[in-house]
Amino acid sequence: SIASADMDLNQLEAFLTAQTKKQGGITSDQAAVIAKFWKNHRTSIHDSLINQSRWDNVLKNMNWRVDLKAQLRHIDQINTPVAIVEMEVGKNGQ
Image 1 (cartoon, rainbow, N blue to C red):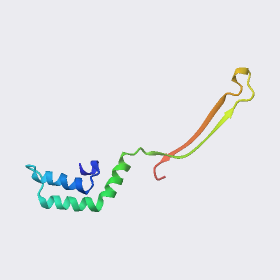
Image 2 (tube, rainbow, N blue to C red):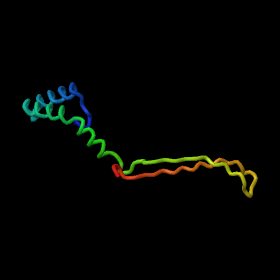
Image 3 (cartoon, rainbow, N blue to C red):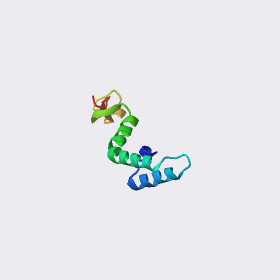
Image 4 (cartoon, rainbow, N blue to C red):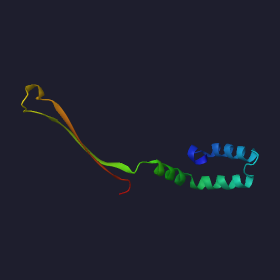
């Protein structure tokens, strides 16, 4: 719950207080350990969750251009713009 909500320190304190008051919840010592761990590792936990939820492929490069047809068999197709898009997709980190 803490990681998925990316809780700030105020939210964390309120959440842990509620957990200690709940029957069958955590002790105040456990809450202190969780709070210290979250304060020290919040960024790395958040980054790890982002990386796990991201698709494997990333856009590495993209090129595009617009061409006009200048000569065709049918006169109504002349000067028709055509977009050409080239995208390079690769694995994240490779």
